[in-house]
Amino acid sequence: MSKINALVNMTLAAIIYPFKKTEFKNGNIWLIGGHAGDIYDDNSKFLYEYILNNHKDVDIYWVVNEDSKVKNKIPGKILIKGSIENYLYYYNAKVIVFSHAPSADIAPYNFAIPILNKFHENVFKVFLNHGSISFKKRKPMNAKLKKLIDDLMRSYNMATAISEFEKDIMVNEWKMSEDAVCVVGSARHDNLPLNEKSKNRDILYMPTWRDWIKFGSGEFTETQYFINIMNFLNDERLNDILEKNDVNIKFYMHHLMHGFIDDIKENITGKRIIFLDKDVTVADEITSSIANITDYSGVAVDFLYMDRPILFYQFDKEKYKQEVDSYIDLDNEMFGSIAYNKDQAVDELIRLIESGFEVKKNQEDARNKFFRYNDNGNCNRIYNSILKKLNNI
Image 1: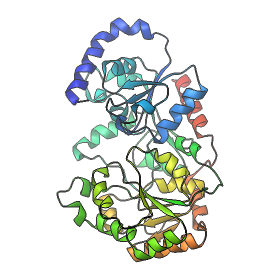
Image 2: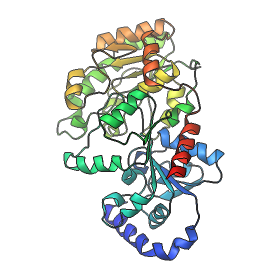
Image 3: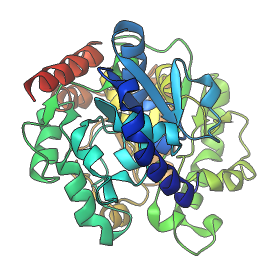
Image 4: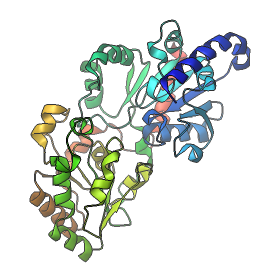
């Protein structure tokens, strides 16, 4: 939905609001969303389904884009993001839950509109984050919006963290309220099997995105990102070992880079490389994969949670540190296997396959650092923390 249509609908909903208020009186309305209304996945999805199935007293709605490919796959009740109905329910909601930001996931532009932003102040705001805080330092895509975004994050009533490591970053670097940040675990981790190897032999390869490439003007096929990924996936030794051991590499292009996927598809020579669609449920691919290859994606933390092997292929570490940087010290705090060029990556992956997908011992220390909890009770803890804070307001 266009910005103009959303703003018109927001205004119309505000005009209608006083006349509709009695219809919502005493309602226990919760709105939840994620990935800017486009994708049904990550922490928001799993908390939504937990509440939908276990707490019938909550009138919960998932907020989704009108043109989202997953709109008809979402269980329960939905609201179309930016519609008059969306804003009316938002104005009468008790709780909103989001993985990115209220404007992106729940009610477009409301926070920035004078007078109407009183509804943002009134509702209880829960920030789930869309993944773990690990390899990407938070920064606004537009530096001019930094103060607005900082003020927005300080307005959240509750935010979830998986460890004291994460809470320290959120409080001391993001300047969020210490009382708001709760170490309760990650909702999506409840979907992850514990102490259990995958039954198949698929390896999930998920490189993260690069803003200097996505918003750059050069040819994608001339970037080091493209060249290093292609050299790795097309390596003859790699493809021989995959074929010999009946192993596939499932390649998932980050959704913000997915516009370049055809350039990679068209240049692949190996038969054991499987391309995943942008709208695939990534959580399912994580749980069904025996190991992970990434560069700086937080998906590595999911594999760490499951105690499954991880290979970091960081062919542009210095450039990444300069452009993005990491909360984890990329020189001294890494875990799993690490490769900085194609040959090292192939060597490490061959070693991993021939070892029967053995987990490196250094992952145990990392598990102790990154998780306070390693169980399947995160959604329950998050829900109870919301109720506790609501009752204390």
